[in-house]
Image (tube, rainbow, N blue to C red; front, top):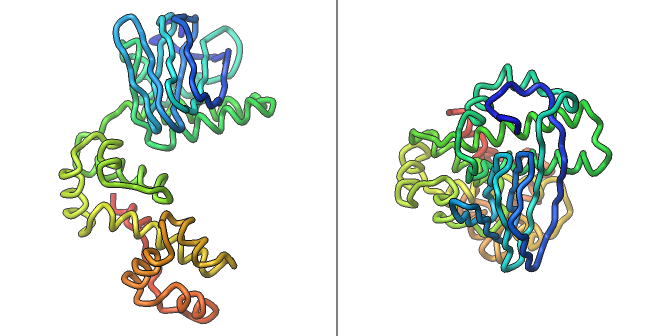
Length: 285
């Protein structure tokens, strides 16, 4: 952006897309705008004059204006992309620049390319903005969505420096991915620390393990589905991230002392199954 360190009053969005490629190669190019790229699935590579950046699902990259770069997709990869620049007219974002110290600090970072680990919310914010643009882009809402996206991106660039900060980031990642096949190493990598240290943090602050937290979130969703839907127990098991009904039933009964079928049967009365769940722990930090 025209000296992105300068005050931003108006922003113009010049390009955007959400595409999935089996393979793709983009020749080196540059443009007079900033670019945000987020990988939703798969992986790709970005090359600049200075470095190669390997991107995988859950990561973003932010390119300053006039940075020559190329994009290579060797296997299936879904990417969201947005390009924007400042101008004399366009979306009004002056309030963002005035009020958000995080955004100002982000643009004062002189690195031409920034690799970011998504806090989950940044990718969602970018997706919501692209959806609105595809539907016509009502100016006021588009401006709000752009500002939300920039705040979330700026927060991704601020790495946690305390155990609680890492724990908070891990819980955000688990909250977004607990329905998938999730491993401790994957969560630790997303946070930027070792698996052993992450386990230590959960043992210290949560009195349990990383997978205990994953199961707690899954059980919260399972309880809701058992009470409020007519889905089969097998379907609920898969919806909550389990590979089999047997595994799901074992975890559920171990946690609540009741089988999923018995829990559903009692749901019409005042069940004594505790509605704790992982999300209730978030208020402690």
